[in-house]
Structures are given as structure tokens and as C-alpha cells.
Amino acid sequence: MLSNAATIALALLFQQAPAEDVDWDAEFGVEKVERDPVTGELPVEEYRQSNANAGAKPFSGDAMARAFGGQDGIRRITDRLVALNTADPRIAAVFEGHDMVRLRRVLFEQFCYILNAGCTYTGRDMESSHSGMGTTRGDMNALVENLQKAMREEGVDFRSQNRFLSKLAPMSGDVIER
Image (cartoon, rainbow, N blue to C red; front, side, top):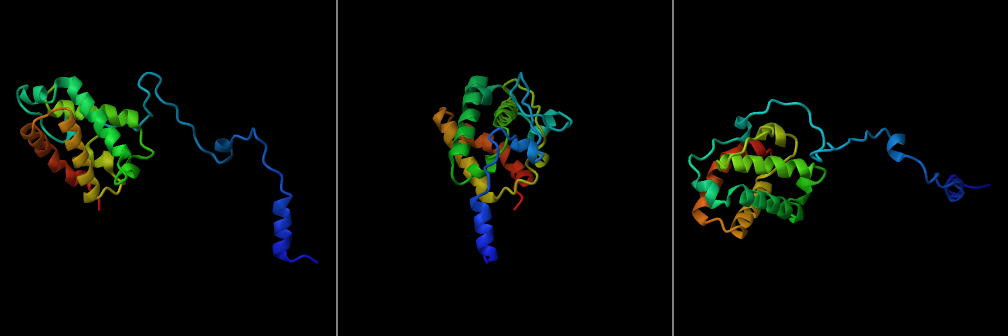
């Protein structure tokens, strides 16, 4: 007579492998979400779009936009910031599972709007867009370091970097949760 453990071991040994054509997402009820065919973004719940959601009023005049290289420079900075953040072992996990296409777009819009480079911000407000992420002060510090690096690489002068960071700093209260 076999023990329970031996019976289980034999059952597992002779178990058939599942069919190769099994749709495991369907088996476990995973809903497939289609990206927008034009933007490549995942759908989001509706919200009220407003430049006020950017979290700061824009600079006046065009000096800051010029210091950042206009929209082209701002786009390079935001793309580089996203790349640095997703490669940074300190904070890469924060970005896992997020729609990076949308993140790049709304981050560019936010920076472009605040720098007064002629953009409208269409993203969510900072509090609701970061809710439930569990962001820490250390996460925020790493992100700011990465932003400083991206701005330096783009040739943004130190004074302009600090002026921009001073516009962004008050938002940390809406982003940091723990």
C-alpha cells in the first residue's frame, strides 16, 4: 500500500501536460485591453482635463522654454527621464506595469505647459494619478536626481534647472504617500 505522499507523487508524475493551445488568459478571466490604434496608449477612466491638473502655473515669457530647448528639448528631457527612471534599480519597480506611452506624453505635456512652451496639459492631477502607488520620499529623491541628470545632458543651465525644480517641488505632497 502506498502512502499519501507516494500517491500524490505518482499522480503528479503521470499527469498530462496541458494542451499547447490553451488560452490561459481566458481560462483565468484575464481581460485583454487593446491599445488605442492612433496613440498606442491604454484606455483610462474618464476625468476632467484641465491645465490646472499640471500642478503648477506656467512661467511667464519664453525664457524658460528657450533654456530647455523648446518643445524638442523638453521632449528629449522627458524621454531621457523616463529611460533613466525605468533603468534605475532604486525606482524601476515604481514604473513596472504602467503605460509608458501615456507617461511619456503626459510628462512632456506637463513640463511643456509649465515651461510655457506652448502646450496644453491633458493628464490627471498629481494626487489622483499617483494614488495607491506607495511612493516614498526616497523614490521622489531618485526621480529628481534623474531629472537633474536629464536636464544636464540636454545642456539646461543650473539656474533654469533650479527654477523649474522649484515649480515642481510643491507637487511632492500630492505624490509621496509614505
